[in-house]
Length: 336
Image 1 (spheres, rainbow, N blue to C red):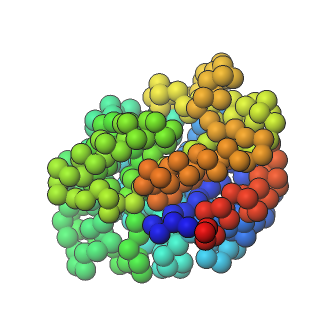
Image 2: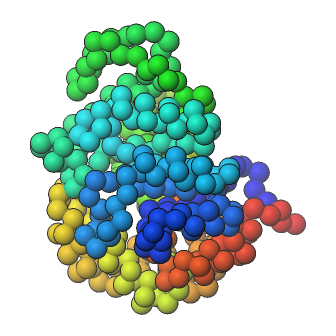
């Protein structure tokens, strides 16, 4: 149907609401349903106080990949800015997983949010400094993956007088650069292996994509050749029940100011006050799944290479059946 590579991923972070014993049964079913990538967040505190399943993604990913066969696993996103993680630790962790499961790890990176990083840094840098730290951290990660001898790294934020990573990745691990605003999209155009964003189609086409393309062209890159990923959130089922779930677990993350709030209890409180109509405008809610096809196709037409479904459906079993039988086949099968 579509000549260009196009994938459908799923943000499986909230799967454990339905799998409190961590059997990973739903993750295995997601592969069987036809999803191309399982994505997981990387947080110390959850976006909402009510979400008690705040797993450690670097422990979870190898187990997930061992229980599945070919599906890829992605981190969306980790924050190598010197708070929880020194970039060298992310280089080592990701290389180790790639050696065990070659080509199946996708690495998303971002500038972070206060709730997960502030207590480790001891302070909360402004966005500009966090972005500088991220760019420098990614540079160090790549050098550790590729340099064949000890080297000295003298950055503004990271210094290693004798840096070397003994265990190199087996494949070229793609780094997805998280960018959800105009400035970050512009920077991603300059530095990202691949773009990752959260946006509706209007914001993506009017703000994110033009800024990304501008940054890429300024450094001599062809933005058409850079893969682009967009995450959309929503749910399949009774709209009232889906909205309630969204407001309980993720609505606070849609409030820009909450990126600077370190307390997940306050983030949850702010999210609970969002009007239902606002949730309907920012999320994709469908009783049958038909509207989800329309949304995904719209992004595909805009040149996006992968759409990630952030699921808050009423019933995970019904959601998986609809994706397996209706949504994924629409994009995978040949059409006359």
